[in-house]
Image (spheres, one colour):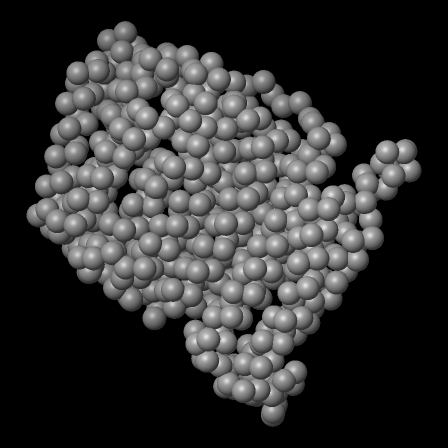
Length: 471
């Protein structure tokens, strides 16, 4: 490659990447607003195409439909511009293929939307319309991943502080002070609390609460919700305690975990084991007494999966531990639904899929930051085994999959404009942070992407809770 071509690629890359990101976000906005319009049955308010047969802004429904069409026209122009930049400059064939597929499918997507407006919306047309839209978004996200992959090695790698500040959402990453030789009751109490990994309570509890709201289609019964959250917190505590016991030897080798209570001998292993079983027994008692048998069974499955399948089998033996282990985070969605209906419904499964796919996009950022730690302890985390470039690419890919699952959640659950707005805004923030991680490749960028991931899921779950309460 001559110098002029290299200069051209370096100049065009940021511009092309930014356009692909913008096209992806615009398409995602169209999808979720389209889903919201379909669920609100606003299509009948504007039966003409491309203009409405009547005032364009005569009612809220007409405004929503016509606004969606204006956005579709704008995104179409943006997509054409992006395609021109990518297809006329030096980009990989895979990136061109992704953009070409999106450009090819977009006119068909517009045609299907026009047919629905003129002839009336049916279930078949709505399904085809959604499938085409999701395919276009998938093609754009694939093009983005390939674009980042193609130019990853050309990024300027900055040097971070060799001891990066840990994330505020990861309690175990915080450096601990030296523990007293004769700890008092307060210190011991804090140590037992730390065994339970309380930084996970808010996330998994919020997943269960969102699922209960979906199942109840409103505010869930207070007593059932309280018992479900309490049983879930106790199950999380048991899982965290058993994890501390089983990983105590490896924890000694890692800077981020060498101050855990079992490593510093504040709590002896046999007492930690007893504490874990006490929490597990209390969790089962709460579920069986105040919820139902199905919720108790799913709670027990979550403890066994995290403590045995993930901690003992997956984490020390495969670089796919984070992906498969994401099933643990999906189980609270099933538990929440089971608590209300004594069954497992499709919306709960889709919500669980959102959490499952989000987990790698979230945790791989920590794996990048603490790569040396994991290597020292012998854990085959993805950046240790397959490199940082592959890990960054997987973060982007799993983010795209998470955003697709979030669309399906809105469709399956009948969620409204609030959910759509939050999913688009926080999805865009997460996506921008992920692209920046590829460009800068620093621990600080990984930390910011980790925070963006937490903000995304937290905001989406809160939106689900609020949306279900105002049904």
